[in-house]
Length: 265
Image (cartoon, rainbow, N blue to C red):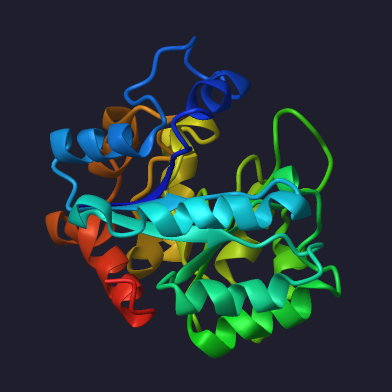
């Protein structure tokens, strides 16, 4: 099994990071450190975990990415994806630096980073990612905390061709707190998706609706750990309208295929 959507933080920052996003009353399955993430992976029988990092500010980008590089490949389980802030003056150059250091994926979280996916400054960054064949993970949808910087399908669509066919994950089954029409629009894009934190914003029927639109071949299993319950996230797939073979695709096969495509495995 591969968890294609997790997070971790440097040991000194992990407690504060957990406290800022308190979804379960302070009770978590991991402490948000890389060692905690590895222990959870081993306990849960995960053979790989994709760990996503986010630089909330342009001036934190290099620091965040140095940590991302440092944990890549740990315990033979960790696939680390770094962060690019589109407002950083050297954003495109940072993509090249990360590639040279063995990073094969980039995470964008526009709501936290404070940008829109269709801003012109994004175009050269996305082109560079596409040229290098790196994987991209985009937080999709809205936030329950702010109405600012929503990641809507129409904003993703503007520069989607810049990725030149490299894998793009529009997370959370196309986006959190989207209407059915917006989910349809997301599924019409040349993207794949993951199931991360779906239990927080979809009931089982709407999960099944979104999964049917994307199709089994385009869905990756993800939890959003540490802000998730792995058993609950797995249950949505186990209880979904999938055959045994399709569940295996979602839990493992699809992620391996796309990760190998960008040489992350």
